Amino acid sequence: MPGSIPASLIVGIGEVLWDVYPDDRFLGGAPANVIWNAAGLNKPAVMVSRVGQDEWGVAALQSMAARGISTDYIQRDPDIPTGQVHVTLDARGVPSFKCDRNAAYHNLQPEESWNDLIPRVGAVVFGTTGQLESQGRESTQYFIRRVLTGLKVFDINIRGRARTSLQIAEDSMHMADIVKVNDEELCVLREEFTANSVNDVEAAQQVIQRYNLAALLITFGPQGAAVVTPETILYTPGYAIEPVDTTGAGDAFTTGYVVKTLEQQSLSQCLGYANAMAAFHATLRGGTPDFSAGHVAEFQHKSNERITNPAWMPWLVEDC
Image 1 (cartoon, rainbow, N blue to C red):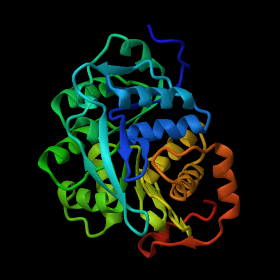
Image 2: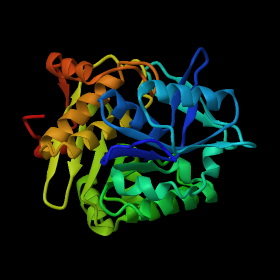
Image 3: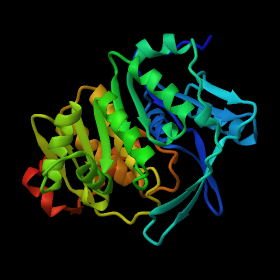
């Protein structure tokens, strides 16, 4: 039986893997990145996934435990290896990924212990990658459908427009309360899932209506981020930084937004903190760097120069 878990916690379900750089490796996977970040902000965090019975799996479990992340719900697969992604960075710190498809997280199995975990979920974060194979998809959706009170946050994370990925996105948005996209993914949504929208703002509003979302979160890289709800639109500019590695910056944004939402902060405070956290994260290396809430607060207070997205300036909020 898993150990004592707080009554309201942040859960990630899906891929735990290693981002393998030419000269280093970092724990990774979008939901795992969120959970890592949440633990860095002193929030109770649990990961639901599957790793191999190999050195990479042992290292993943040890890294998460050292970060204060519960690994009680991470399964061990006797036959399939721990996932790996090979990462290269361009001159701007923007990553390219080459994924190994044979990965243990694709074989995630439902467990009876989930019945104890699910009622304690404050927010659960899930994505596309962990659902690319049928077993992982069935198990992830089984879990998500049973979360009745916690926030369900879907990071669309579409790479390309493979029909399977688009169908996973469609199904997952129907289950989600909050969906997170970047500007490129918003273009995919506009072209694949909306009708007669002439710009990104109208596309976002149509997505909100079609999937009955509480919020659509949109990141614009160095140009900041926006949140669209059924009632309002808010935009905040990006921070002028020298990026080191943008791997996982979007996951840092998701973390910041979820954490502040669970703290019942205002919409503008949630957006502003998420935006700052993503920018700060991009000044560090790897998807799971070591940082604390104090580091994020210091970055917010010291960083003044901003970069705007002109198309979203009509919805600028000043106190972000």
